[in-house]
Amino acid sequence: MGQSVTKATTPANVSSFVNFPKEAIFSLWTSYNLLGEGWGLSVEEVIAIFNGAEFVARAYGFSDHQIRTLFDAFDTDRNGLIDALELFVAIALTSGR
Ligand SMILES: [Ca+2]
Image (cartoon, rainbow, N blue to C red):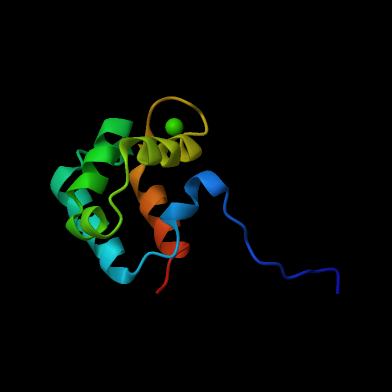
């Protein structure tokens, strides 16, 4: 009553970053722990983390442009930083295989 259940949609420009298998999530988290310098990540750090995540790099091979598009979707205040935990939680929540 008064509620509707719908299926979430993903903007086309970031749709490549959903439905990751758990190996991808673990790979990104490991890469973040090795390369991340804190919770605030620049686009260069996010690119390095995606490229350093062995499983993700091998299975998906995202271009810098694709990763910059993802970064821009998260950097809503356009200050050049995004929150690492929010990024990884969002990716994990939109995955689940
Ligand atoms: Ca920001």
